[in-house]
Image (cartoon, rainbow, N blue to C red; front, side, top):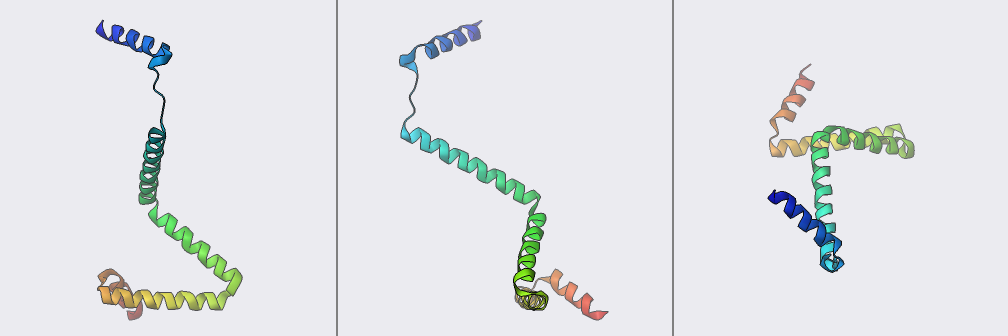
Length: 108
């Protein structure tokens, strides 16, 4: 019963134009910031779920652009140099999984 009375009071206050709150510049800016934060959270969540797909897509895009503009052999050379640089970085960081992969690759 009390809830019904509260709802009627809210309805009356909304009907009264003097009680309607006008939004200031501060309120609008805070709403923009809130929406931006929600959008950032959404993109972080989506990127967390589809991280490897996004990375593979970007690699494919970069490779296709290089193939079209530079040609096959120059693109292959770029990827080989990048792999060597990554290997050196993994060696300094002592990334065991990459080093094991390299050892297995060259053993056979």
